[in-house]
Image 1 (tube, rainbow, N blue to C red):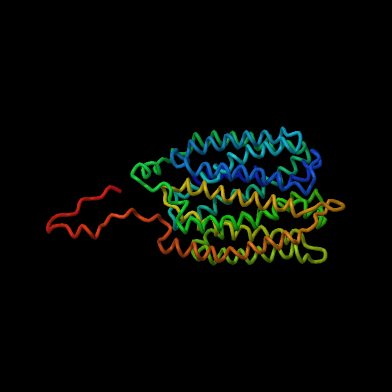
Image 2: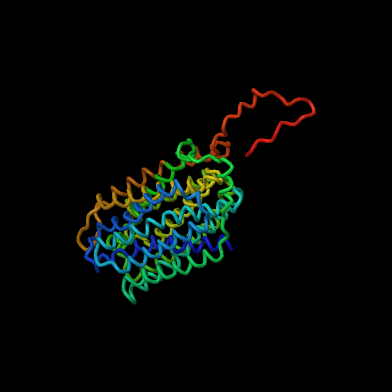
Length: 416
């Protein structure tokens, strides 16, 4: 029940973000926004989520998981509804900033709840199931939002998703347990600032920046690219995203089990190689009459392989008492790097005749360079986690100075 409920939360959270990119050309035409500036819409959300994640890293662990998640989901739903009321680029950006400010903490809290409740040896499978929300959002949510936009206008998906977000928020309050065990660890003296300074944590944050930056150089522009550059009709866009989501839904569950068995480094490296191949064929050396659907499916499958590997590994880095704080700061890094990638794409791209995007190869080359940096980071973080270096160092107790206890007497128990 807990995994299902968190999956529903993630569905709304993820769909709120991912549906905006395929809908980009629709509301760009309606509101007079240049296609080459669509990265700003995605970047505004991720930048706000980054700032909120950074702020949340200092206080989220002081509250019960349920109440904090309810507040975050409420703000996300209101921001989504506001997006449907936008009248131009400025008001749309303001609505996306509001949604991102609450959506970022909602992500970190959701992953914290799963990591709190599921042992590390089964966490890959659990996270694969929760991340299946991304696939459901792609299989059902994105195609439905595209069709809904055709039938009732581009505003309709925002209104429907915002209302669904409010319903799931009510379900979270009613069904989720309080999840306050981490507060007991804090009261017992668990470290409060270690996540920001340990080597393994910093490497995990760098890994996050590489993954998200590489992806969001390209993802916000994918819908406009396949239509303007590869000639995909707008009427076929929902089929493309639906099929890609179905592939992700199947692969996420299989990959989660594979990560538990083989480790994040091996599986994540394979995913990086697949992503590099997909980027090359879609954006750099495009074959004549490109099989757009097959290439898109390869790209979505590779993203699933890489993302489950990376998320499973990062979930093992923090201790329970610092998990929400760690996840919140990581969410800030995640969204800041996503915003950097999206905004960089708007600076590098230009719109050509017929809606074609120009200078895409430069963008793809930068994404490939970041993708190549991921496997070494996966190796280092996994080595540290399995070697016991992920947990914060214990406070020095000068145990050796005390000497052994007198015969027949046990040493007093230390407060943990």
